[in-house]
Amino acid sequence: MIFCDLGDLKIRSPQTMQPVTHRCQPLKNFKFKLNASPRGRVGSPKFCHSKLKHMGSAMLKWVVLAKRNAQLGNRLTMHAHLLAFCLEKGCVFLNPTFGEYADFFVGTRGRLLIQKDGALRSRPLPNWQAKMAYAAVRIMYQLAKVSRLVPWFPIQSGKATRNPQGKGLREFLEALEAKGGRLAVVSTWKIRSYELCAKHAEAIRRLFLPVPRLRKTADHKLKTLRAKVDLILGVHIRHGDYRRHAGGALFFAPADYRRWMEEFAACFPGQKLGFAVCSDAKQGAEDFSGLEVVFGPGNDDADAYGNKRHDPVKSVIVEDNYMLSQCDYILGTVSTFCSWAAFWGNKPLLQVRSKCEHAIPERFVVPLGPD
Image (tube, rainbow, N blue to C red; front, side):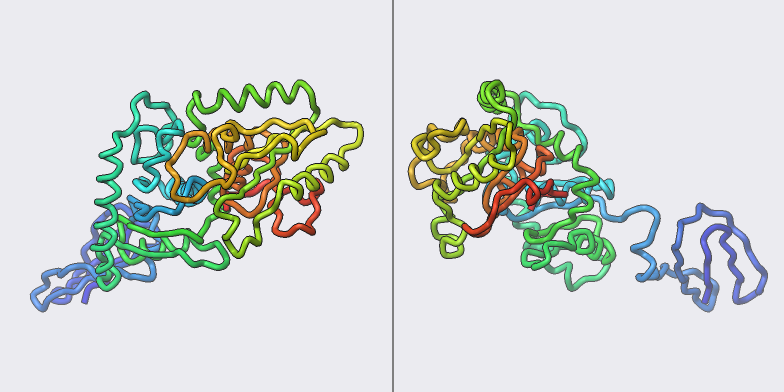
């Protein structure tokens, strides 16, 4: 049996017992054991599993998100947390699940590989390429499930979609790395890394800047409103699928939002407040009469019911989200849509869960990461 310490590699032959010293590059906190045959030939190294995750250089090189997460807000949220991890570790992030929305943002337009490059590409990604990439990754994810039974296999897969605390993304991916994974193919949802999102927030915001044509209408509407008021509250009214979601517990009528808007305005005596109202359902000006209100770009094309989850993807939803992000405060119910707007715009957010809640400035908080 031969034992080695890295740095100066000292080996004592079991036959001659004469020490042999070999200089090599040290790897921090790393040890391995070599098996020697009776003739002195060295066999393959057995790596110390408990030390592997503490190696100086990361083994994990690629992270692939292999399953879509509903609509825009959900996909942006999971994308941001995984991207933050990859920026921290120096990994490459591949996300073919973002396909339909990729061409709406500067850093994802025409790309599947997302890193630090925020330069706008003039050509969008062909739709057939996005579909083929997603299909290939879905197949890869299914095939990679066998890796859960094979330690030290370079392709590892994992699923983390039901984490009640909403934390643990870093631990989840590092566990795949500790198994020997260089490529992690994952299906994730309710799992987050808020501290890494906060650390890499500026890089994430640069990548997810909406393309110029999707910012024009919202910028014009808000510029006109700001000329009349001192402060703007962005209001996200989610109807559509929330009519039935959780038994309608998060569905609030326009009258409820108006009450919160007036309550918020009363907290700023001597200042005139304006409101930017964005909704997936068409909102009428008569419900907000007497208030200084502008509606999001999507209001003109919306119907009375609202989003039905399987509706075709429209760029106007990005315009509405961008408008919310440019307000001074954001009010909405529990939704990744308004959470993303608050994170991307670095603005205080209040997500109401019941009609009896109060919309006072002290309850608004800037999120560390989207949720």
